[in-house]
Image (cartoon, rainbow, N blue to C red; front, side, top):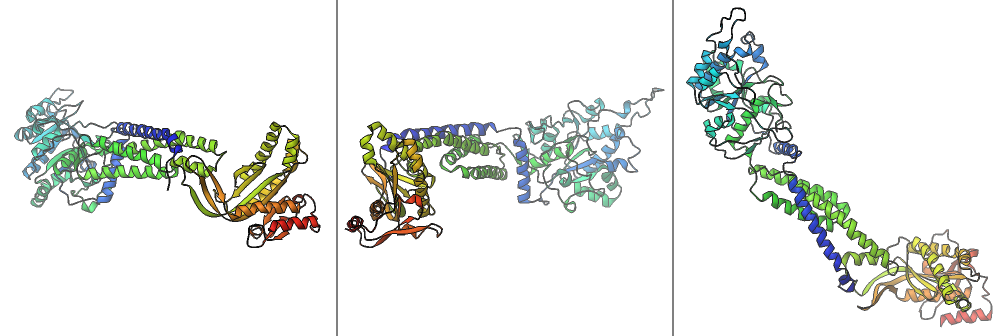
Length: 640
């Protein structure tokens, strides 16, 4: 459990900084997310959502298809019946086919042809004789007879011949112009109300079928239109008229449907449409005539696009703009979530969170399609990802920079791991701690008292600082932690507060390297008599904070520490630079040349211990005279 203290009060500015970063991240996420609405890439994502929807739901071949397309395709033009006739002279045949479909039960007929020329006006260039006079009268009579049920097209650059316009009457000529999104793809239709009076062919035919759409909408195709829209070639219609069975089959195609005539020749009147990524309806499930269908082109024929807009509106297979405020609300929710994730989660987890946020945003868009709303697919994901990026950059660039500075600053006085924990939590650790097995080292500068008597105070400080700095580098290199400085000695610990895999070996290796520094230390300090003595012991200790609310220290305490201090006296008496307890010796590899220098019971302990050193020349200050009475007295004193 953590408790507040002065550190938390001093760091309150960090809390304010977190709040500021969160606010900036949320604001940036909302702004960037909303700017993604109507972005040029958003249409591509929308089309992919249609593809995902089709993959999930499958192609429903039983759904009603209110529009029949009759195509002037290559099969018709190559047939024996139509091959001799120029396309510009096919108006009578189109009239015959249209009337047959109306008689068979079609609700209305629309022609995606402009009929810009009339054969009646053609004259022989040499004689001026109008040899085709009256050729188009069947088509004109057909238009006049079916005013209000038959519509012909005009485009931006093409209008019907005046004779056809007159025959069709007021409202008989409608626009087949479709608008594209910013990426050049047709997706949306904007109806003009009332539909019956609209200038658009789509609206006029919708009105004839009882359509009630009232606002801009996006059709949601379920498969490639060229494979799924009910289809007859012009040749099929003319052929089916020749017998009763064919006429009955024609009635099955036409009854209760809107009929659209259009050109199906490759690369003529084709558009990029949102069906281009969708699966194809299997041939056996498609409604089609004896001649089959033209092959599917990369782009979609204009007559199929018109048919899909009409069919989608009549069957409810479309989506409209979401209610006011929904996009803004989603942007806020995802931006807040992204900001919190960027601030609270580790950086390694953020890519996965971002991917999850994008998936969640697209999932909401898919769900919106099912209830008839086209939610801009870029708003929520972009808001979430933008907020994640901004908050993560703020955390790394500002908060973690402050934290690193704090660790560097106070790491000279306390364990870096402890500082990091306090920096993250903004609280002081609770007094007390945990029991852990560690290695405790006492590293003493030998002869410091005599040396300090001969030197000025500033020089003493310089010598000590040089020694402690060089020794500290080695301790840190071997994963040790300097617990405290005690006059001319260092107390170091391995395996607290940081974990060390093999603290016994690490401490011995560090000690050997420190002893190898003696000649270097003598040279840089100018103190030839300078020497070092190191005592090591391992065992359980209490690791944690001691003190009070106003002053405390991170340290280790216990019998293990006291024993290490007394082993230093053994080292001093045995005239060795390194003395290690048996608990350390038994954990070292066999390659370490250990030799026992003392065994017995130290003062204050209830059991015997053995003390060892590395059997290397550098470990001995001089060969100890263990047989002398003076040495015996000292060893006896250690046991009291």
